[in-house]
Amino acid sequence: MDLFAVAFYVFAILIIGCAAIMVFSKNIVHSAFALMFTLGGLAVFYALLYAGFVAVTQLLVYVGGILVLILFGVMLTTRGYFEKVHTRTVNLLPATIFTGIIGILLIFVYLSTDWTLIPLEDGEVTLTGLGELLLTDFMLPFQVAGVLLLLAIIGAVLMAARTRPPQQASRSAENSGTPSQKE
Amino acid sequence: MVLPEWLAEPGLNHFLVVGAVLFSLGLLAVISRRNIIMVLMGIELILNSANLNFVAFSRYGSLSLDGHMIALFVIIIAAAEAAVALAIALNIYNRFGSVDVEQISELKD
Image 1 (cartoon, rainbow over the protein chains, first blue to last red):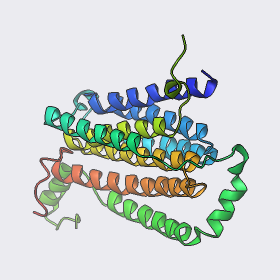
Image 2 (cartoon, helix red, strand yellow):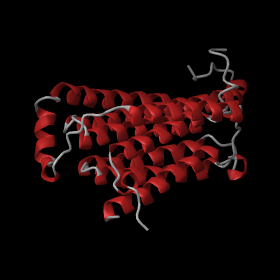
Image 3 (spheres, chains in turn yellow, green):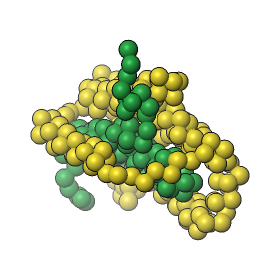
């Protein structure tokens, strides 16, 4: 059993265990931190699969960006302090059965298919190759992704910046008699 | 102790099975949790399982470097989606005073 297999099994257990904690935990802050470990373990998986650049991007964007964003969302959408952070779970039994059936079906399909295997060589994945691909074959998606990110940033800022707490808004509207500026 | 061969050498199928389990857990979070942020986290999990499949196929299958590029674009889209979705969640919280997806049942007052 070589180092690759040991790393695979350790991080597979980490990923699946933390994902299960994320789904079943009552406390949403615990869920967010379990999601962080899942995403970090997936970055290790990408590194094991020779995708070093994807692994670094995963760490930067997911663990550094999206997770912080989610934690901000948790903080900004909870009333008062952190006593009332836990959330509701409904239909747990039918949902578990349904997703279990889907997961078993997927695994069955994966294992019973005869994939054509053309493994990559170790030195075949280079940053130079990725960069050339980005500026030749993937030129249009690259530019469109840039425009999409710009649109998403502007839209998110516009949507998040014009809001204020409902009590404060209604009180100021009652007191001053001026029309609310919510719209 | 001698391990059987399919257990001792992780291959394409092992990564695909991990991806399938992650997909199931993400789907479970989306359909059983009622906090809008938990639903978002489930969507992130589903996107990551798809990403793992792309990278695994580019390592073992016939997808070569294209799989890496698709994984990068999926990460970009996920970042944009998370930013917009959290802005929407913030607006919903300010208007309804709650982020429970079952209480959000009207469009405009």
